[in-house]
Image 1 (cartoon, rainbow, N blue to C red):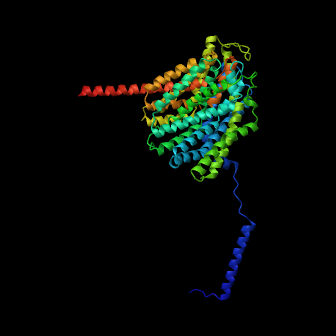
Image 2: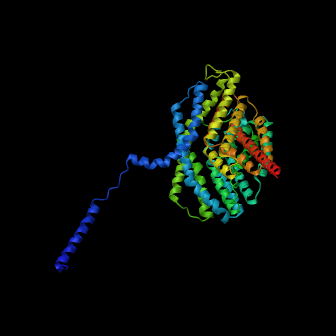
Image 3: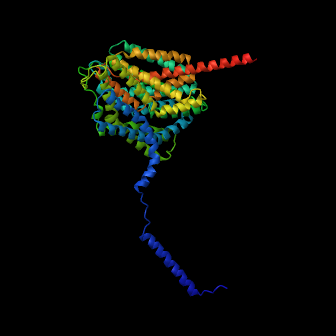
Length: 567
């Protein structure tokens, strides 16, 4: 039996309950819940999985090449590295900057590009698509990290022996960068038209290469224009970096999907090729326009050297590179496509990271990579000729010293190429598309060997003060003949592989090395190493493709003969 409760007992229980509730509420107000504090170990465990793989990628790309340069300078050239602490800090800034920049591109810029690439062909007419593609190519080029190395190259050019080249790099440096961007924009437009109308990449490469080689031959015959040819071809290598390639490919793949080419695995190949050729044409056309100007009595002092750039100027440069591109992408998505920005917090974080990464990279380039490359390049002649910085020079006999310089250039090109993560990604893709006929390692080492040979030839051009056309025209004429004989797939692969090898580390390092070497041996200019480094893999990959086709044809013939004999 339950015990009967009186009304007074019930009322007292209710009051006690109310007091308990009020006391608990007061306790919660007066003693707020304390937030958990993260220890340094906890922060390390949270951040490490995010930072470690990204930092390791940059370590693999930057550190082997920098160590190779330093060791070669110490052991072979018998000279210590000047300013080692500043160079070490600069290289660390390069790695941190590339890590932040690549993360910023992934989170801040790529969502725009992928969305625009998917929606733009569906909601806009073809003229609007082509106009946006052109603007995207121009602005993406301005945001390339390696473009800063081009702007600063004027400080190592002799205006007395190459006045037009010095004028382009100094008085017309802004127009030069815009010409390069315009070339990339035109390449993106042609790449999209190729996808829409089903044009063969093989035919486009041939038709684009003929005027480029014709202009090069014209420049080679004119002493005033000849030094500009190396700059023009080097500009083609600078453009295909971590900003331009993914952005334009995202737009190209979106157009391919809209055109019903989504099942074509090669739809992404080709734009990188055109983005390497068209800037060379644009720079040579700009040089023709500038050559008609009245010569300046005394060329303006060379551009400030890398180490003379102020941090304020670097901050402004980073903002100018990233913010216009971001604003353009946002306007296209919001105004033209009428799409709201999703995950605005992540996108904003990505843009901040991209600006920070560009700033750190430019500072690291100024204090680390550029001085290291210039030092090594300027000391290479000590191996085979007297040198003011090396009292014991020449360190070796002439033949042995020149051989050491060329081997050094080849090893630098080989190591820098093997460290490029984009090349490994391309190798995996190609192995899948060719059903294992062209293996990943085969592509990687074929491209690396081509870059090594091309880099050595570029250094030979500077050491012996040869006209660039003497090396460049035969290389590209050979590539043109092999292009005619090769299949469409291998043409796309070979010409695109030249753009993949020139990353944000390789370009400024090789450019600084070539310019420093040219100044040391009193060459007219130090350009052309990147141009030859880009020509080498085209020839090597096309040769490998022809060999694979020949091997497959022999296997088919042997199989047919066996079947005939068995029957």
